[in-house]
Length: 107
Image 1 (cartoon, rainbow, N blue to C red):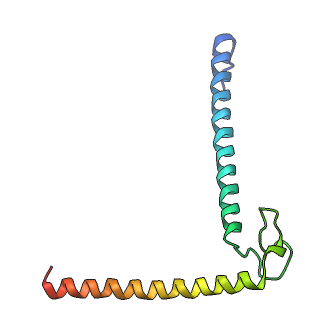
Image 2 (tube, rainbow, N blue to C red; image 1 turned 135 degrees about the vertical axis):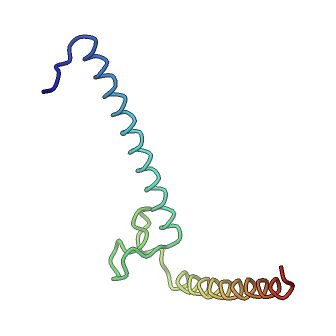
Image 3 (cartoon, one colour; image 1 turned 90 degrees about the horizontal axis):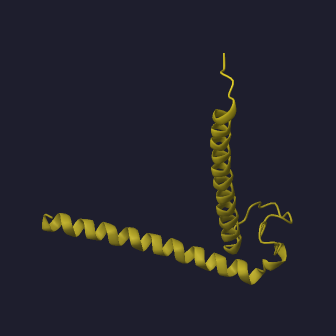
């Protein structure tokens, strides 16, 4: 059976609960801010949230809407993705070459 708190004990317990509540509220507010920042960062990268052509498929959180996506922007994104693939391939080649060189030298 739970002991009933009275007087000083009750005030101490209430203060402890209020402090915990404050900490939880602060942590939640921080997580909400982080999530909002990450969502807006994804929107800045033109992240596609839905590929069905719906109004909230792109720029869902920065309120710019789908009209900021133009043919030129899509072409530029495609060029950048091709460059990313080339970068990745070249990086893998360099790492493999460096590893082979170290093996050859007995390092």
